[in-house]
Length: 116
Image 1 (cartoon, one colour):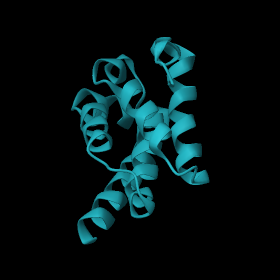
Image 2: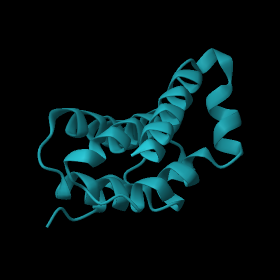
Image 3: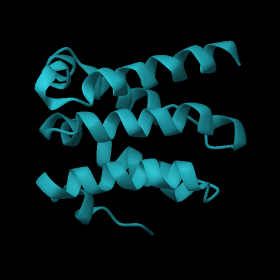
Image 4: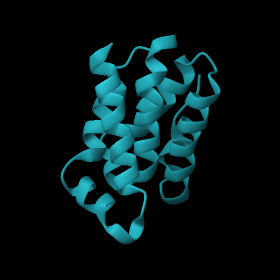
């Protein structure tokens, strides 16, 4: 549980650091693999009640870091799978759909993924 808590707080910090477009932190983090790392973390999470502590910050970080790299890292598929497997937790759904909305504004790939 300690590892989940530490990972969660690091993802929250990443989100905070990259939220301001003026800082340039999002571009720097993206250039150094933040999207790929965050997608990799999300892809390894099994959804259950305890996983929201890591899934929500992970999805919120992705929403901030969305770029073309997200598509190349299988991000849309990972997010759709997480949302499909969720227990309809409002925080998880909110964070997941923030990623979907961010991706949809500049990337049509999310619309191509089948929800069934």
